[in-house]
Length: 163
Image (cartoon, rainbow, N blue to C red):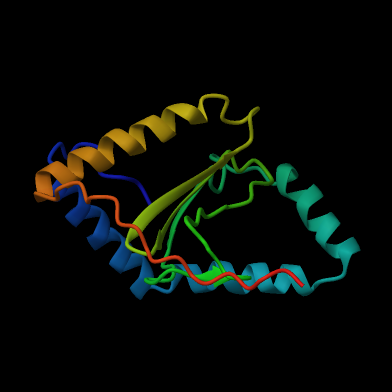
């Protein structure tokens, strides 16, 4: 999906991206990718290797894709493990075959975390994307009238004594 970079207003851009995303979801584009990935993942390793080695030999006018962006809804409440509260959750999108950048947003306990994974050869300046996301998110919050939330402290979960 091409981003509507010609739209300057953050709220209007969000509406345009949401609209385009709804179209892709209604066309079940992600389901086709998931089906292909599941098929490939269940193929014998030799067939998988042949597939990945053959892709560069297929003449395409442009790469199939060079970036994946996704959002992952996380837990709306704090999670605990061994009596310890998980304080943050950051998503990770693996890179591979000419995929330069994987970018994901994940909600967790009222916060939003971003994870950016990049191939340093394909995208040596991925740190700029991080900075652009930060600036754009602040612009969107300002345009939407969202005030910065005060840090809230969750009550500490009881810790079991060591045995």
